[in-house]
Length: 66
Image (cartoon, rainbow, N blue to C red; front, side, top):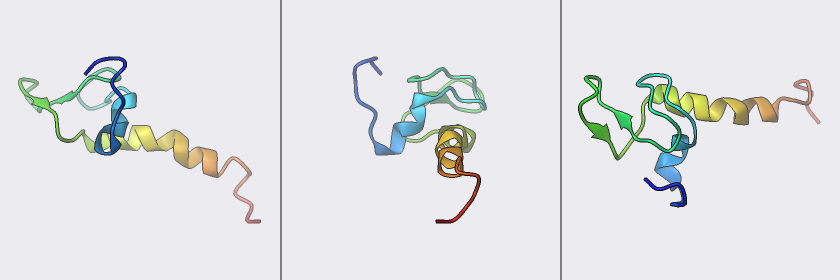
């Protein structure tokens, strides 16, 4: 994947490093043995790492309802 190629919906978590397999940002995750690239999906841990800042941004107001 090139640096200028835009990320598409199923692979948006590629914007962050994968805590499971150690792949860097914009690099595909690898299989459990590290021998094959996972081109169609990412590890669940990577998806959680991608979503974490998004969920904290929604609650930065102290959790108060408006």
